[in-house]
Amino acid sequence: MKIGCFNTLKITSFTSFGAYLSDEDQNKVLLPKKFLQENFKLNDIVKVFVYTDSEDRIVATTQIPLAQHNEIAFLHIKNIDDFGCFLDIGLDKDIFMPTKNPNRFKIGDKVCVFITLDKQNRMIAKLGIKEHLKPFKNHKKRYMKLPAIAFEKTPLGIGCIVDKNYYGILYHNELKAPVNFLESIHVYIQKIRKDGKLDLKLDYQEQKNALKIALQHQKILDFNYDTPTEIIQQHFKMSKKLFKKTLTELIEQKYAKLENNKIYKLDNRN
Image: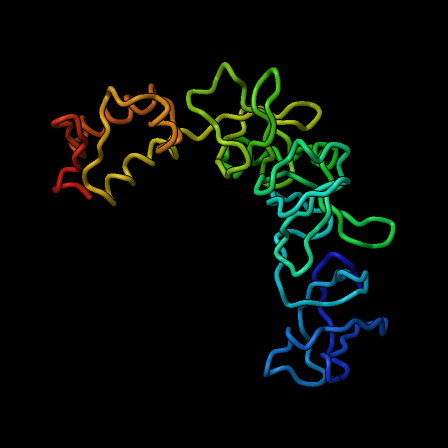
């Protein structure tokens, strides 16, 4: 039975406080009564998540955590004490993130952590995820669009987790639009280095589409070529230069028109 992971187990008995589940080695774990479903029967095979509760007892749950053992996760801070932070992982019990300087964090902050187990087999979240990222070896995926999350700023650029497993960088001198940290983006692999790290290029078409999608929904946008940069970045996650270029393209394509300092979607275009 794997702690901190999903397990497929058999219901072996029912009690007044839940059901006992067992694996092939006859290891047993309690599924508390509040997680029992009406259609559960003796000998049913169920998929559950196994972890330790607030009293460090091994228990099962049908709740779905935001991450499991050996995964990288982006979690919100729910509470802070003198030794670290408690993070919302989607279970009844929050996961602890130890840190020597908890005062640098605030409740509600999102942090990037690696999920592992401590010596007592309790789930724990650790900062410093780069050592857990793998070298990229699949050269067939070069130039393909992949999901990524920006998580650190370096002297060269923005460090990203690519496809949940790999380290890549968006270079400062190639960025044409701002990048929001700890939010999902899409990137292209420009180069695979000998150490398996990736040189990345941002998918600007995705950002350009943001303006078109906004027009589809609202028909009229209170924006123009003179709209302040910070407002454009806040609403469309793109630079002013890219915004102006995108707006010009939409006007040339007769998708939109600029009138009275507002952008209007033309009715004859989908």
